[in-house]
Length: 256
Image 1 (spheres, rainbow, N blue to C red):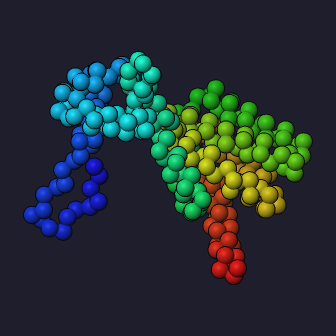
Image 2 (image 1 turned 60 degrees about the vertical axis):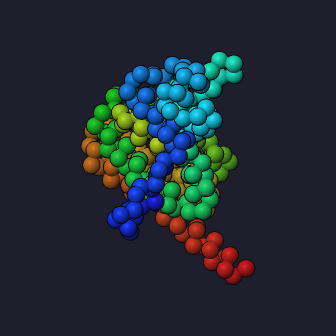
Image 3 (image 1 turned 180 degrees about the vertical axis):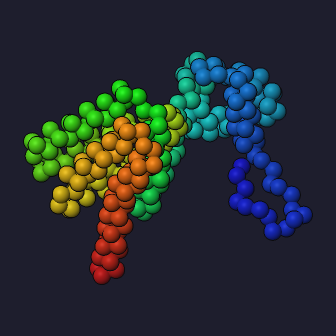
């Protein structure tokens, strides 16, 4: 149970955790201790409930909560297992929140994305291999082909798909799997805003490609500070567009 904040009454006792909270905390503690590893099956329900000191009903509720979080998975007729604890899967609840936030305040989500991706670019500039840099370059080469073929007018989606891949490649090259998972989780949720910008701002796609080349140049030169700065400037343009479009929509709603 996550407390809402410090109590104004210094004599007030902390709220007691629910039985479900105890189950979740106990199983997570067992995993963190290494007694249960990815792929291991949980002990049978009766034994695990006794070990934790809760009822079997509370145990089931806790296990269901852990399944939603992606920590465990129940296999029909075979028991409950610890998942691979893949970062992308564990960030599933964040994806749900990002969907809601993108509909309500897209600029706020883009702001978070800018902060994360600026750091992923800086890290990639430090540790990216020549093979990873070559893969990023190949992705941008595909955008050049699409632009030359007139995709900016006929197939914006194809360009945005490669754009997304480029950002994911940078994150994967950062050497930080958690940061990469966060970037990957958020990148897809900004798709609509980037499409609208490409459609409404003349030359935005070509400008984006030039900015991508600039970011890649700094990563290839292993200049972390300049890679971070270029990514900030690049994503700030999308963020500014989202804020401007949000104000326009709000004004339209008020006038209708």
